[in-house]
Amino acid sequence: MTRDYKDKDKLNDDLKGGGAVARHDLADVRRSYNTGVLLEEACENNPLDQFRKWMEDALAVKVNLDPTAMVLATADTDGMPRQRTVLLKGFDERGFCFFTNLDSAKGRAISSNPKVCLLFPWLILERQVIIQGEAIRLERSADERYFHSRPRESQLGALASRQSEAVESRAVLDKIYEETVNRYADRDEITLPENWGGYRVVPSRYEFWQGRSSRLHDRLEYTKREPDGWRLTRLQP
Image (cartoon, rainbow, N blue to C red; front, side):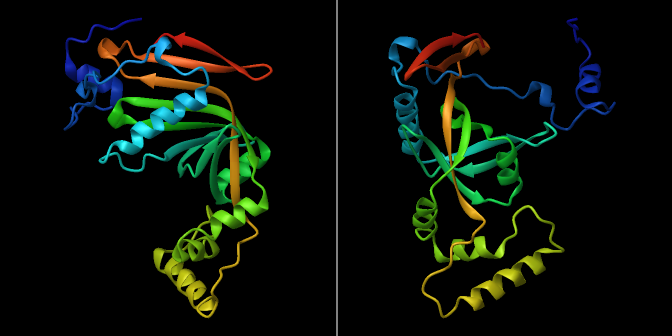
């Protein structure tokens, strides 16, 4: 049923469950999308090539903070989805790589259900890319190479943190980190933790989204077609 809202207070009641009008009327927060188009004839046959073009565009925008940031969605054993932002550390025809604590919530979720979804929110370009696929563990040699390429402080942080576990306070966390720093003060190389490493997301589906006027956005989907091809389909917004 479609409601004709002539009374903004009633609209606010429906959207936020309270009688007071919000200081900022979120129902009226919107903007137009007019910066680009996404047409089939301009797309690459291989979605990886299309992603590479869009990533280059994102990297070229100087005010685009963290263009390699991606939202990683997993599902727990009870089916509850969880999301968090991680950083893309490399991609090629094999997939998209990131690194994390393997005992973290995301690591445990991937261990029980390797099907994941990535989202690149390049909002400043009015673009998004969604990638669905399966996360597989990287080789330990790849873990070693990347871990030792990180700043020393980041390596020590990975050793100090028991990611996703409760901690009494920030002061306790800082103390654990300080103790870790002191323990490795005389060592040139930091030991790669056994519970730290990388994953590669092997894609089975891509969706490229470009904002358009009148909310008639462009959505182009690439789905895997055996043995090694991709099918391009336009989706309604």
